[in-house]
Length: 191
Image (cartoon, rainbow, N blue to C red; front, side, top):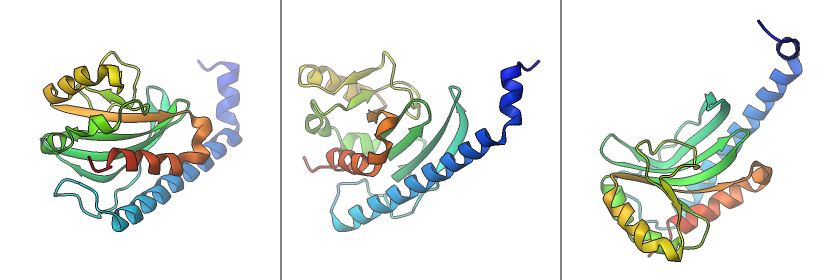
């Protein structure tokens, strides 16, 4: 049965009200960021795959990714079974927030030369089977550094799908929009 601490928790409306407030603020933050990216895309010519449109995506959220709530938005994105392209922004409560480029199929081939631009900028290349996974603590990941570039390029070419990610401590959440915009610009800089 429930411990005293657990009973106290479910009886206290403040914990639930606070979580709802946080959820609402995080949701607004992600939608504001999507608008910022949309404006940036309007003002600049980025090399996106053909099927990338200006369609806005909905923020997705859940309450139990490895025990913790999360919110995520894919924008810009073109998602399919064989071909996938997404700039994904994730806020994973009690863990981190991150910005990633998820590539599979033709979009992956388009960005092969992008690794060189990301050397020694704290980006990580991940290549596990589920590219939608948020966890970055895995044996199938490596920081993109000058010393590892040739090995990472080989991995990039061999794998069906990859993710390039940069994560931040949640205590930097006030800088979310600035950091996300910087990541976006770095990921889509012309080679």
